[in-house]
Image 1: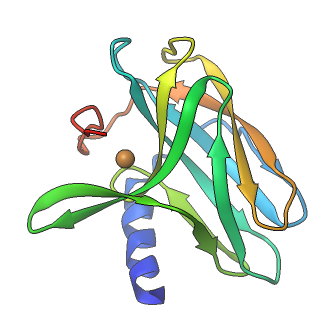
Image 2: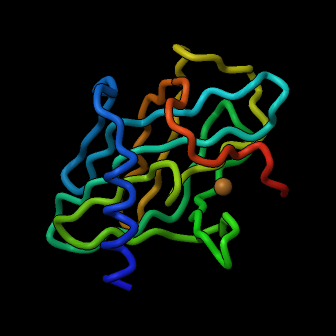
Length: 159
Ligand SMILES: [Cu+2]
């Protein structure tokens, strides 16, 4: 598990794009930064979002739910290549080891945002609330950006 996380982390880092605006929030346990939503055509009902989740505490922290007032629901997914095919699996929780971080980024962990109430285009912002077990919920601002790499798109994804 640990090894898998390390590999995913390095994949995540290789996708990491510099220059995100510093939209961040921290409490004593969790620091959430670089929260962004990939711009999608207005007809698309699912958007993908990414963030850096850092655990600054001495205990592991587990993300148990995510929500956004602008979307009907939010899921955490993990993209994987299975038999040469890109697939994603819904994750119920995500545990960040003590003093470690997990990057949600194209090709690995990501958030899927369903049914936007207000359409979002590049430059718009909305809020996303992250709830960790035993920690007060954290609401952060997310900015919509154009995706500037060629990783697989999410609108082929069926739910
Ligand atoms: Cu997904």
